[in-house]
Image (cartoon, rainbow, N blue to C red; front, side, top):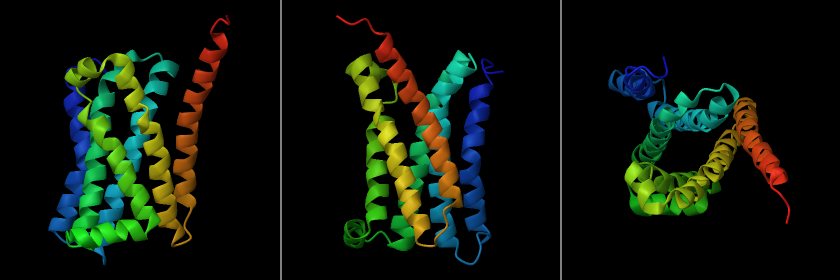
Length: 202
């Protein structure tokens, strides 16, 4: 199934479905009493979900012995950036009316907005260099070092989500995402430590 040529189009349609659902909901006014808040929060939630799924690709490949899943990582990463951009644009439009000065002041005033903006800025070079030409231009080693910024982006996204939910003293979902990210990053840390230990000492 992973190697079937229909797998990528199917994944693309699946990843696009939340956007289509939100677009339809906004179009028919079905997003609840506060559609602006619903749209901002939903796009943020989907950004964090796609980030977790993207981070899960490498462990899934290793644990399940399924090298074919790697071919989906680029698309998932780009959809993470897509929903992150939608999240910021929804905030800029529905909360700040695209007033650049107001947005800048709000970013400086509210730490969780600053952290969210920083997360999106961290993901920008990753999205921009996710193509084969960029890998060739940067070189594999340099490209891999650059794309390790996704780990910082995941932690900052979690912090952004935590501060946002802290305002309403609602930490249930935060705990779930924290556990998922801890497992995904902890697996990588364990693998890195094992590889360092296995290296011969001079």
